[in-house]
Image 1: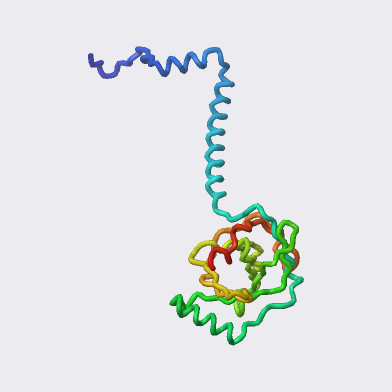
Image 2: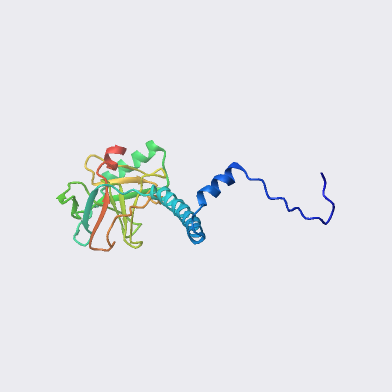
Length: 207
């Protein structure tokens, strides 16, 4: 039946099963506790969102189980490419149909330690550009001294090619930024450490 304009409906609201269950659940609970429980629930939900978001972001890094140690101040020699080396590199680039995005890196004598043991692998420096960068093929790590960071070049088309001597590397798209390595100490021209994985051996992947 339609009510007359201006009248007030004093009929009690219908009690649904959900509202009845809520009333039974809250029966005997002091109002201050119901208020606190409500806000704690909201806090826990917000915290869950933050944790999930953090786990999603945490996937964007390239750390590993192996600890690497280098002394960037200890190296005193860097290999100089010969005319034969340049001919080898030029032939490689012709076969790959590559003209740009090429960087030459040559081997240094910088001490290189993995999990406390000396590694025969090399530490390489770019030739003529990218000053302050060092590349470690095992671990696929690039040490950026000016930026005080360590990154992995494991994406963006990056690849390396080297002769059997491995005295130098022809790198493609070396300038491409990629994922960070988060576990490392202070990056300086001295002793440094970082965590990566020996399974990320770029020589094994790209040869």
